[in-house]
Amino acid sequence: MFEGASALALDSKGRMSVPTAYRALIKENGDGNVVVTLDKDDSCLLLYTEFEWKVVQEKLSKLPSFNEHTRKLMRIIVGHASKVKMDGNNRILIPPLLREIVNIDKSIALIGMTNKFEIWDEQTWARKLEEMKSKEISDEVPFEIATLSI
Image 1 (cartoon, rainbow, N blue to C red):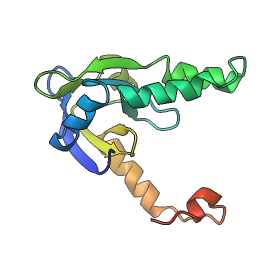
Image 2 (image 1 turned 90 degrees about the vertical axis):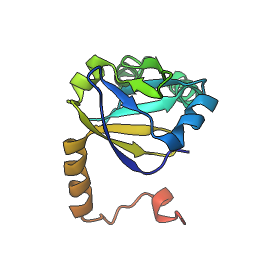
Image 3 (image 1 turned 45 degrees about the horizontal axis):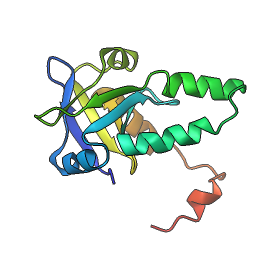
Image 4 (image 1 turned 135 degrees about the vertical axis):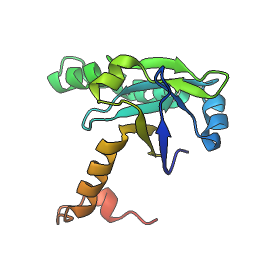
């Protein structure tokens, strides 16, 4: 579904232009409606099509609601979710509060993660990428990754 990395600039109103390759996919999977929310671990935003967001909501709704970890997760992901519609010029507004929380100003990196995009401040992404590339791989690789054949 979503793959690759794109360097984009937000306009003065905080809108990003959706790369051409993904416009039809966003329209097909929710009539141009997307959900932008916080990532639970990193200083980035997540962008889901409306269809994929429903899948995420379904999974979250099955978690035990009285568990403190579930509540924290729900507050971060669902509590900050903003539904946005791609406009006629194929732009998506990144809500001001979310931009502020993850320090996104003008230049962003859009990173495809199969079922969603990550939206990073460009400089933050560059640092994160260098950090990931320089880390040694531990001996404790999860089974799902160790057995992955791509």
